[in-house]
Length: 263
Image (cartoon, rainbow, N blue to C red):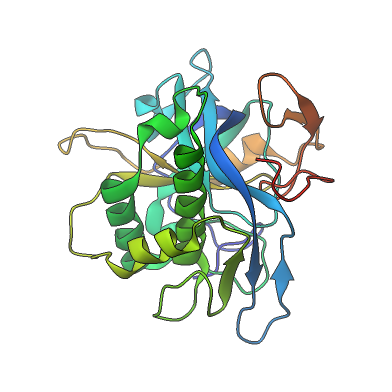
C-alpha cells in the first residue's frame, strides 16, 4: 500500500496538534534513496539525530493523541518534507503504516520493519538524547547513528540492513559501524517499545514513543476528517539548531547552507 498525499491513507489512531521545537543530540549526515525503477534522490547534508516536540494541550486531541505529553522526542522518517515549528494537526498511525511520504517509490515500512524498529528503540534509544542538553560528543555520535539506522529500516528495499549499501545509503555518519552493529543484531520477535508514526500530508513524518497501557482501547477515527482540518499551509519559519537560533524551514532535517561537521 502506497501512502502519499491524495492517495491511500493510513489508519488513524488519533490526532494532536504538535510542533517541532528543536534538536536533541544530533550530527550531520546525508541519505541517498535509489528505489527500483525510480530515479535516485539525495538529501544532501541533513540533521541526523533526535528531534524534540511540543503538544498543544489546550486544543482537541483524540485517541492516542490523549497519551502525548507536553514535550517528547522522536526521529524523522521523511526524506523530502519540512519540519514545522508552528502547531499543526498531525495524525498518529500504526508504525507499520508510516511514513506518509511524497518520496517517489517509497512505501510504508510494513509490519516486519516496524517490529525491527521497535526492537532497535527498545535496545538502544536513550532519553538523554532529548533531555535539553548540553549533549556530549558520545551522545551526538550515538543519536546520529540511531537516525541512520531508522532511515535504513524505514526505506531499505532489500533484506540486508546496512547503511552503506542497498537502496538506502547513509553517508557522513560519524559512527556508521555502530549503526550497522545495531542493525545486524535486531530481532523482529524480540522486546519492543510502543512506537507510532506521526504523519502529515505537508510536513515531515516522525517516529515517536507513546507510553500506553496495554488494556487501553482506542477506536480509530476516519483520517479523512483530520485531513480536512489540516489543509495545505504555507511554509513558515522554524527554529534550527541550538538555543534560539532561527532559520528557514528545511526539508528532511536539512538547513540550506549547513556545513558538513557543523555539529
